[in-house]
Length: 338
Image 1 (cartoon, rainbow, N blue to C red):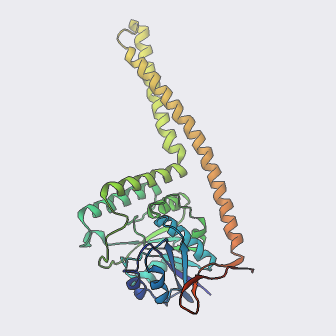
Image 2 (cartoon, helix red, strand yellow):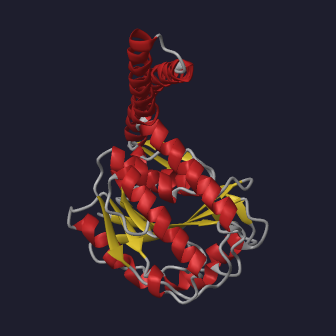
Image 3 (tube, rainbow, N blue to C red):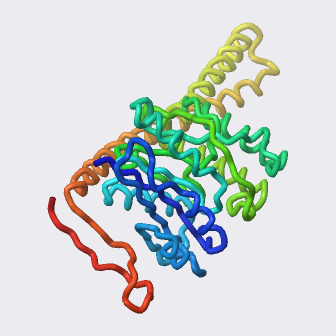
């Protein structure tokens, strides 16, 4: 029996979640079971009640708001525990057309992809401002370059992920998961595919894009951190080697004039040589240390993946249900060896 779980990270989404859930499918070609899961990221409104009223199968509650990336990561973990073969992630504001879910999962069903990212028609979307369109274009270009993947719309949160990939992804950022997971996938040589999707009219302003400057700042930090985590020697070592090469060239220039005319008037070259040599040596040493840390991180990722495989042999349920009075209460935790 093949299972698809559609997950929706939520924070105070009582106004829009119902619209989103009404559009979700209960039958998708290629799957025997389709379930819905909502991650309540510390909401202070009726998000959970709305979810349960609309027939959501599972609700995972996070006691305090920890950010979209944490909600995404928590949802993946829950979906794996619930036996999902494929996970579709979508937003609670109904931005993405649920009718495109079959197209989104099709490359995975056909065995052509590990991750499928929905590419929005950004250029022709009327309610996207020119600044948002520019940011989406630049962000996708940078992520394509850093990840060496053909992803067309990197910031898109509408994506399908296989079970194995869900167990392997590690999200460091608390801000957003969209850029980081694609860069990780590229460096782990996972198959990333983009498919065109449609969007719906805005139901509310974006919670991530509060200001252009903050979005650019947090996105840049996320990209740099992820690139450093996976390619530390390239990030630190290449500038270090370039600095040492320039130091060698300037040092050779100084020695040439030293032996030809006593080096008069070329003391600046000697000073710059010393600065470049010191900086280059520091960067190369930093690259070696960072590379060792990166190797250790990859080993820890393998251990984490093995632990996830072990957890596959357990049936774990720690979600929400209703009692007789209609009050939302935690369900009992059960753990039964397979």
